[in-house]
Amino acid sequence: MANLKEVRNRIASVKSTKQITSAMKLVAAAKLRRAQDAITKMRPYAAKLHEIMGDLTVSMEDSNEHAFSDQRELNKALIVVVTSNRGLCGAFNANVVKRVVNLLQTDFAQLHKENNVSVVCYGKKGADLLKSKGVAPKEINVDIFNNLNFENASKLAEGLMADYEKGAYDKIVLVYNRFKNVGVQVLETEQFLPVEEKPASDKTFHSAHPNYLFEPGKEEILTELIPKSLKIQLYKALLDSNAAEHGARMTAMHQATENASDLLKELNLTYNKARQAAITTEILEIVSGAEALKG
Figure (cartoon, rainbow, N blue to C red):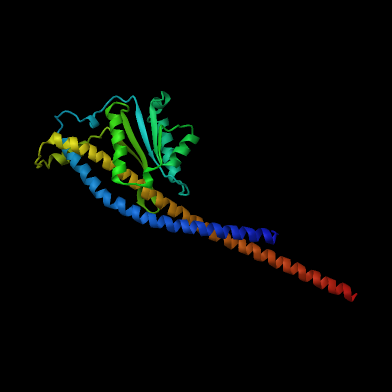
């Protein structure tokens, strides 16, 4: 039978852990509400902007290609990894890193073998996990989620666009968790550059809606629209990941609190059994002593 003091110490420890996980769940819930509002408001705008850009690119098939839609021979690639700065959010970060490692072993296997694949990490945990797997990030940004806004996201996007434009990379992809709901995060691998062309079905759809009036002109508008659309794309990915992180942490802390409650029930039962056994033993000792005195 377990020692009463040991069980009491374990009960106190589990109660303390339960208080911490419960508090963390409440904090994550409060942060999730703000993050969810931000990504919910951003998605319609990002979708409409992407639709308009698709209309323009389809209607300009005979024009010179824009620098950011130029399809080059793939010699160098960049993977942008979006994770969190803190842990205790289940498999949120591990899933992203697992996808990155899979990309390095499949889609970019030959380039990775030739050391022509670079990795940039937005978030500390992703960088730490990649290092443990032998992948050294070229750059680590741990500040973006401390002040996540469009201005800061735009600076990151401008840096990526500048690297692509000068030929440092021929392809840039984003790997992040998209927020679906509190309990579900969808892992995304999204091409950032070059800008992907619309599929044929979309071209058929857009060709049936050609009634656009352009001022000053298609090419000028597209030159302005593509960089803005790319900034929005990166900002949306960061907002998605931020909301998904808080949802994952809230779920993880809820499960941890439930597990602590179950463990407390087991420990209390063990403690009561041990205490009952100890009391029974004392009574038997007293009765035996009394009988001995009678004799």
